[in-house]
Image (tube, rainbow, N blue to C red):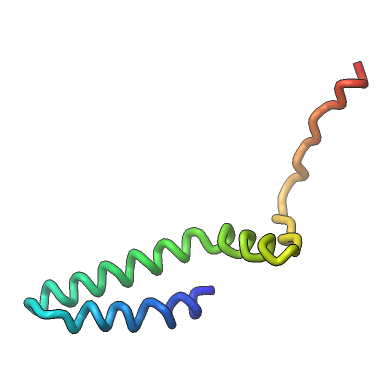
Length: 77
């Protein structure tokens, strides 16, 4: 997932670095864009993967951990 994002974001960062202006501003803008994009993808990888799997009709893998309790059946009272 991260490699796919880098293929997209690196040319965009290079285009921002080539815009007119001072070197500090150009590199700062490109760096901020790069770091913001990488951070966003790194923190939301699980949600993105789950959304893509569901989009194609596949069930996402279950996360390890304690089982989720089921709500009580109203007819059991």
